[in-house]
Amino acid sequence: MTALNWQKELSREGHRVVFSGQPFTMHCHHYNMNLQKTLEDTLGEEGVQLLFQSAEESNYNIFRHLIDQYNQIKTTKSKLEMAATLFQYCGMGVIHFQTTGPSGGRIVSPSSHHVTGWLAKYGRRHTPGCHFTRGWIAGIMATTYNRPLGEYIVEETSCKMMREPECVFNVTTHKT
Image (tube, rainbow, N blue to C red):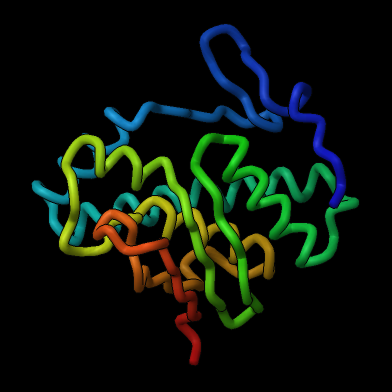
């Protein structure tokens, strides 16, 4: 994998955090989980979709910018390795792109900021809740496989918020 100069790419400009020249927002689990719960409680599925689409679009754009800037990151494997590293370096947790291709795949997360935050604030869920991570995966997959936003459907089939051993995401495309 191509080395990324994290000191150069992740910096501050005044009060703003900047990653690869793009504004970047990071929040603690209190903010993230309160935002998610508020959106779920007030808007239901529409709130879930708002989280998903926001994560998809923002990560698509920043990852596209990063890939364009580091043109030596060419292979699918190196792009997915970079995505996993980005997920971890930004404090989001650990993610493994186990089997993926242009038509989808299987991704596993054994550890996640959102899971830890949810369990600390609200305890066990009865439904999967990694909406941000689902959107993040959709954006990364679209960038990696040079597909448009909205191409990927990401379903969480196992969730640590439900006290399952790991979060498992199955990815398919809207095109069958």
